[in-house]
Image 1 (cartoon, rainbow, N blue to C red):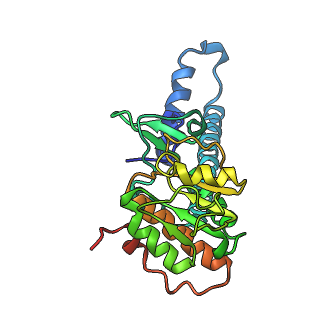
Image 2: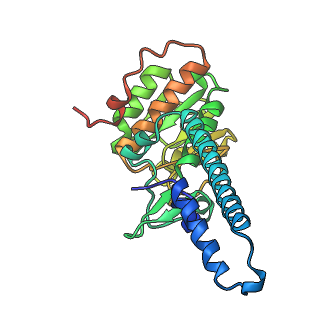
Length: 276
C-alpha cells in the first residue's frame, strides 16, 4: 500500500521510444508533412535528409535531458530516504501511517489521503520529520524531569522498556490525578515535560501538566486534538507495533543526544513484536 505521494506526468509517445525508433518516427513525420507540400516548393533530397536528421537529433537530445532530470530526481529521492530515521518499509510494516475515520482540524494538514475503507493515511515523510523534531525537543530535558504517560494497553510493554532504558518515569495502567498539582499528596512530584501517548486516554495527566504550566510532547493520531502541546509527533497511537516503534526511536534518539551508549537498546523487532 503506497503511503508516499508520487507526482505523475503524462509521457509523450516519443519519450518511450529508443533512439532508432525516434529517428524513424521523425522521418515518417517529415515524410507525411512533405506529402502536403506543393511540388513547386519541395526541397532537394539532401535538404530533406538534413531536416530529418536535425529533427531526430533534437528529439534524442530532449530525451537525454529528460533522462538526466529523472536520474537527478532519483538521486534526491535516495538521499532523502537515507536521511530518514529508519527505512520507509519499516514505517509501513508497523502501520504507523494509519489513522482513523475521524480527522480533527489540527491533523488534517498531515493527512495524505483516505483509503477505500475510510481510514485516513498520514504522510510518512511528515511522520519522519516530526519524529526528528520530537527527539530533538525531548533531548533538551534531563530524564528525571520527564514523565511518559501511556494508558493504552497495547503500548505498555514498549513504554516500560522505554523508561528502563532512558531513566524517564513511566505511568501505564493508572495515572493518579493530582500528583503533579496537589502538594499534600504523599506521591506528589514535579516534572518539566510530559509525554502524552494519546490525548484522549491520558487526559488527566495532560490536564495536570497544563495546570502547572509545564511542557507537553504529544503523540497524535488523526482523531486527536493537539491543543496544549509544545511539540507534536504524528502517527498511529492505537497500535502496539506503531507505539513500540515510536518509543524505540525516541529512546534511541534520546540516548544518542545525551552521548550515552545505545547498545543497551533492544533491536527494533523487539519493540514492534508481540509480547511473549
